[in-house]
Length: 277
Image (cartoon, rainbow, N blue to C red; front, side, top):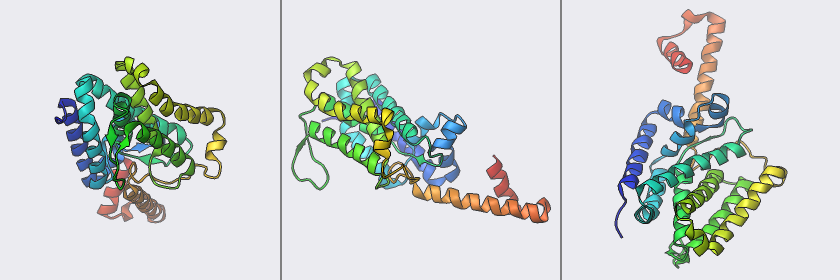
């Protein structure tokens, strides 16, 4: 099997460069990361896209890009570069929109990562090659791709309801379903050829969305979407730094109130200027 095409290579490079910059520059990451308050309060909609090219650390980046490589090379070869690019970007944005919808009441919710887009690539692959055998970590036997797809959907729904881990299941599910449906728009005959598999994947997803629309308390019951941050789609260290930075600004403002602006040190004035920007 060959390697990635031109679009796949570009996606890998952009993810690598963008993430690397974020690893080394907290202000860069703060500017482009997914954050509910920034998107809904300040209309900073670019974050729906840019956050998908940022990652928490090297292991997060590596896991997403390895998964992207193995499924993306087959998908790009099968569909061509333009449809492949559309699937990736649509999955990324829809996955983040799903997270935004579910966490709209949690202004501090912050996330990053390409998992929604990678999920879309995976599910587009499953739509076309449902009987392909896949090997998962810690499971030494091959599993049909469609079984992986159904399990992925059910686990994502469980994760959204339970909120017991730090994984962005909302973006995963939204991106996966968006990728599958977008792929079928390019090759609609596959909807007929693999109708049963697609039905098994979409039914629980549609039921979940209907419940979220009309009976959201059934999903939120016992776990009202706690203000917790995502491990693979949120950098906890980033959020901790945000808290510490805010505490420092509060201290500086108190100092100004007590002793005046002239009492600040050069370093404190610099921090206040950066915060103002």
